[in-house]
Image 1 (spheres, helix red, strand yellow):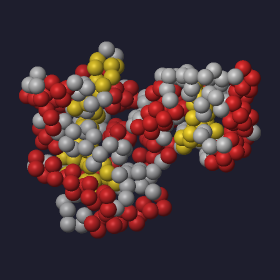
Image 2: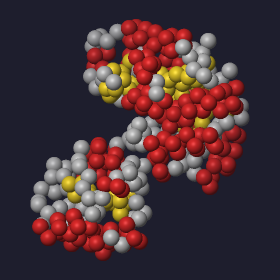
Image 3: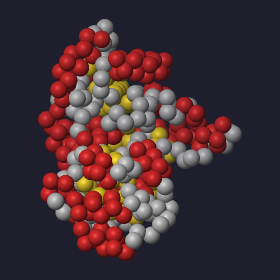
Image 4: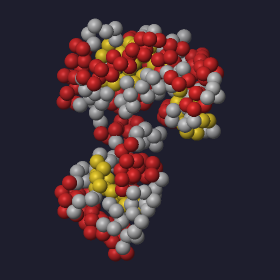
Length: 365
């Protein structure tokens, strides 16, 4: 019978998918037959002609699991699924049966299965398929991923664990993730004290890594559906800061930090020229990832020539306002993409250093 590990989270952006990828990588080093399933998928995509959750598509590509693809994402939730469920047009029992069948098929061909939940433990409740309910259906024990910190982790764990307790599901471990390196040991020590009377273990996750958390220029171009002009070799650079070029030109340059994407409207000729010239100076090139240029006004001919000759990477749009661009980028939840090979390789390497897979394996025996 396959061993099953259900990866839940106290909320979005805790690093649940990164943890799933890490543990899949480590499991494949110990077990011959390893599988992945995202029972309820809220982020829909099409991969190899199959409608699946994006995380299932990612794992399939990274770990070459094409043979398992029909079972890796048995239920996907579309934008209108909530209304259909409340109108009685979705049958929760039918969805439940799909999940049970998919997991049963994977169990027949696997020794170890990673089950990834969706969002926080209550996601899916509208169709009676919350994370906690699915974990119960699949008879899986839970590893709960949390954010960093102390007080907020304690509060979130107690609140979210209550739903698993209600379903009679065993939470075997919590994994505080995205820990500040300088506070890691202190944070884990206090969390172990706080949860000393609980039946679960506290297992440290990754330290906070900006290179993993922040998007590349390629990612920004994809979410905005814009072409990258200029130096395309820098398209994989990580953007650590997003800055609106609203103040004076001098003030904008004073505020520049390492790896910044600047939003500068097409009418700011002086600022566009200054940044283009600074990009050619090594000390400033490390600060400027590129430009995002909105505005209905055409960039003046001379300014456009200077921008192009500098080879500074830039995205140009006349259909988005500065405010809309800023919101879109900040609200985008950065998800790993299969083409992010450098990041994925780094995650695998960090996992081998950071995680004691044998300890986790024993906890879920």
